[in-house]
Image (tube, rainbow, N blue to C red; front, top):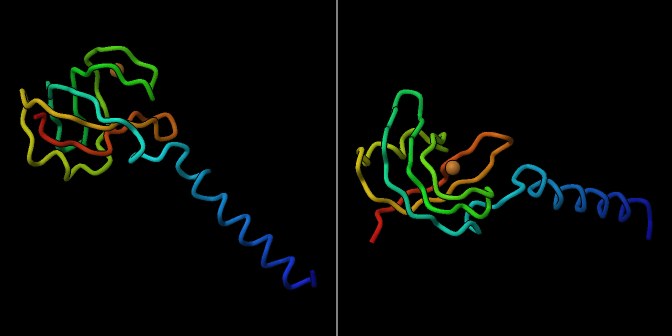
Length: 103
Ligand SMILES: [Cu+2]
């Protein structure tokens, strides 16, 4: 392997490792959980949910506040809505990454 090939290999290894560092938990792999919206704060982008078990966050059922990944995703919801949602630990901030209506 010549020097250029070696450097290219190093670069590809570094870049392939980056997504894993930036997102320790891919949101799309998290199983959605049932919840009921208790409180919405569109200004601060926070949402309080009574949620079922969240295995990926090591939580049993409880009522708690999350940060919305994007505050705009709170627009269509209101208090009392039954939802299915995904939440992840984003560097210590418990963050809701998706919300859909419960069936
Ligand atoms: Cu909780």
